[in-house]
Picture: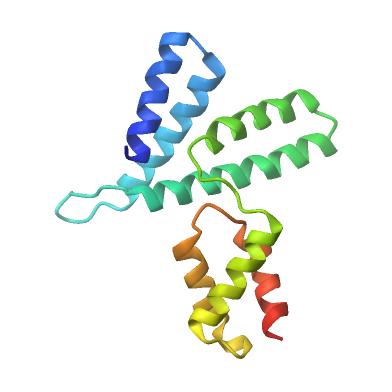
Length: 152
């Protein structure tokens, strides 16, 4: 089943269950997907957003909410931080499982060998290979410095 269909099924189920907070988060996901479609429309008007784009949208939404949680906790607004955490849980249901530290290291090593990288100039190729294979499974902001350290 496509990711978009899974989101729509979950949205319908949340309506049946009268789960207001889950429903609100699922509607936010749908709105973000539709915004992406509208932004990508060409002259012929036909644009569909596939699973990779949806995973990128969900990853971005998760990252935004994690930043909000930190800001709310620093500001002493634990009630708002909890609401953001609940949204993160709903969003992460549709993302693939996150890789642990050992798996990330193994993925970096494999990408380096596959690309045949031997200097920092090959970092873009490595990151491209990692994004192709592990979209939504790792935080590429944290992986970048690890790749750079490995190549240095």
